[in-house]
Amino acid sequence: MINYISAALIATLGTWFVTALGAATVLFFKKTNQKAMNLMLGFAAGVMIAASFWSLLEPAIEKAEAYLETPAWIVATSGFLMGAVFMWASDRIVSHERLQFSKNKQGSATNRIIMLVLSITLHNIPEGLAVGVAFGALAGSENSAESLASAIILAVGIGLQNFPEGAAVSLPLRREGYSRKKAFLIGQASGIVEPIAAVIGAAMAVKIQLILPFALAFAAGAMILVAVHELIPECQKNQSAHPYFATTGILSGFATMMLLDVALG
Image 1: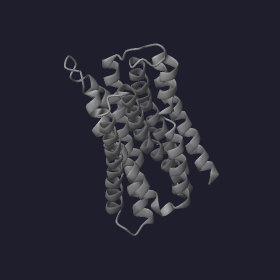
Image 2 (image 1 turned 120 degrees about the horizontal axis):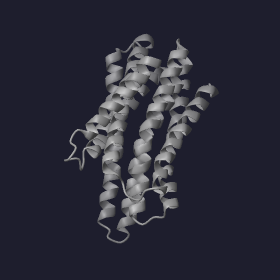
Image 3 (image 1 turned 30 degrees about the horizontal axis):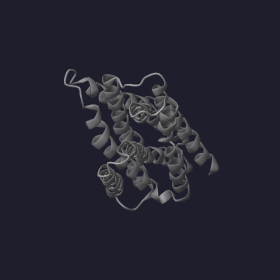
Image 4 (image 1 turned 120 degrees about the vertical axis):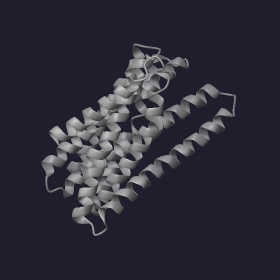
């Protein structure tokens, strides 16, 4: 039991490290290369969309059919929608606080930074949860080697898309006048919730196997909402001269994640 939880922790410490690598770009650059950022954010969105199906929804349906009396389509659909609603409600809370901060002119720059960090941190929760649940699923898996490969691939995919998220925090901080060191420290700290969420997700999946299909679908719904509502619109900004640049990133991210999961999983 402890091994699966420890594995989830180690995997998400790795994804956190990639967030730190992204945040470290502030040590070399002060301004964002918009084309590169659009490409990276698009890639991140593609990875999250592919991971939501290949590593979360597909095994959720398989496990629901194998272990639950409730029809698999009910489990997968309800879990998916509740995960999306959870992220929507969380985002609404953050957006409300951002609006309240914007009404206060004093310290407005600091408030913008706080809300930026909170937004990115919030989006890291379902990613950590997804990795944790995937590793926790190994406890009841009949094909542990294949399930382990799938969990590792999911962690790798999450790690790949964490790089632009780290840069998306640290570079704006630098533009607001923060020192390179402080911008880096705050940027990498936005990923600290991933190991925490992973341990919680893995522990729940190990201890309560019956909720595993629902938990996998829940994580998928949360990730899809983040990708569609946040990452895709963001990567499509400021690209009039290169309208398909970000789209190439989305397709590349999806294809990379699909290739890893199908070929190695």
